[in-house]
Length: 387
Ligand SMILES: *Cc1c(COP(=O)(O)O)cnc(C)c1O
Image 1 (cartoon, rainbow, N blue to C red):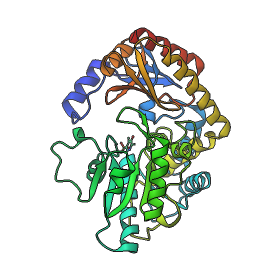
Image 2: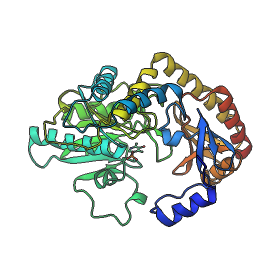
Image 3: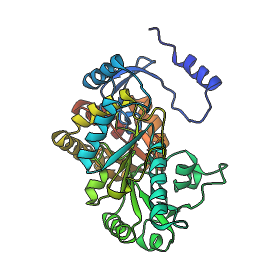
Image 4: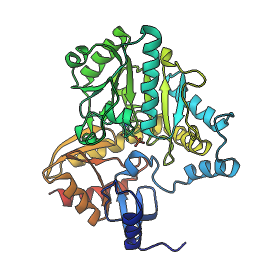
């Protein structure tokens, strides 16, 4: 296929797409692993993985084989019927986490939307009305639908979109603040906050919160949309904290590059019955085939490799001039830098490295199968840019 030149693509985008994204001036047309090929003919090392989506980078043979096999069988059936890859992926998620059941949607926002609805139903069934609050943390990010946007604890995302969903509010990450709120159905946390700058929550706070929620029968929701699926060296980041949530939501990296969202119900939080919730594309067999392939490979041995890579990158980054702090967990890395995050990202792009930003930080979320050579190439660009 003939590829369009970058300037033609940009012109079409600017003319026809809603201008909701401040894009970097580059388009990609191929690649392999953590190396992307630009339409400019240049190669880029990818420290972003499409925002933690491309778990095994691009063009991964094993993943493609699983997805194409399902594509060659049947691409969609509707939720009026049963579907093997959908049922199998749910089984894998439950067996790996101890969850009882799974609901599939297509995005992180949809997964959270499902968890919030489930929490409200749980609370309503047990305690009646007046106990419907969903409490999130300041600086959190939970999605762009109105329910999840309301729960997103950053005012910058809220401008112009009110009125918001009632009984959804954010609080500082302290037990005092959360304990002072009455009528709470659920608390939602990201064990590692992604969009606010890659901040791992304090383990003592998370454990105290989990104990408090258990005591009050408030459901604890772990939003693992970004920090889940092997990213931190555990299948789900809450495992680092030694807690058992009631609901876990995930999406981004789960299917390795296809749209998927999942809400995992633990124990009595499994409250939905026929007609309560739905999603036309939810549990799509092609996406689920991708998810099965990803989960099969996120085994103990591979997760150890992720930890090793994370330790390697973190040690190097800590030694770079211009790095003031290295945050996050595993291959979810935040950098507080002397230069502004945006300047760093633009300078890296110029030199063939893709990095992300989050709030005031540089954010690195490389594919989990990134090679040593790709890490070294990217790190050497970063070193030059940061000093
Ligand atoms: C990206 C993200 C979401 C929203 O996911 P979408 O797929 O964009 O709807 C929700 N929560 C967290 C923690 C995220 O990082």
